[in-house]
Length: 201
Image (cartoon, rainbow, N blue to C red):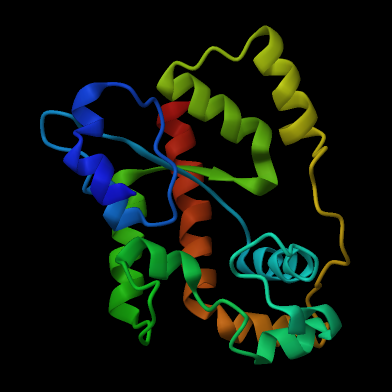
């Protein structure tokens, strides 16, 4: 899909307002010095993200990553299995989604990409996030769009309600270990979010 879009000159065409993809490096190849893009991303605490993914995939038979064995798994079993993602955000940023061991050097590169290339948002502060994105990109969020935001983003109408994994629980250290580089990156993202607020408002 991305390669085809690049061949057709998507960035040059001006037809797309937003390109959404977990393949950060591949998607960035769509743009050129004459047709630049600006990356924006909403980050979630890695343990919270992993727990939410587990509960979602237990039922999401329509997803390519769905596995029937998840139905009867506990979250602790999930965290110990190869079905649980490990440092997926760092992997996405540095182009390692196909596997390989994530290193401290990969983490350093991921932090540098976030600092230099990404307008940062947080799931824990969606109101500020949406305002920051809309102000930066000049999005018009009035009328019907505002109503949609109110339902889906602020009230969480499409939220997957599930038990939370809290610090001190059996699953917490297992998910932390699976996502230790993402946790380090997330702490860095919190700092970037604060600093960007100083100049983005």
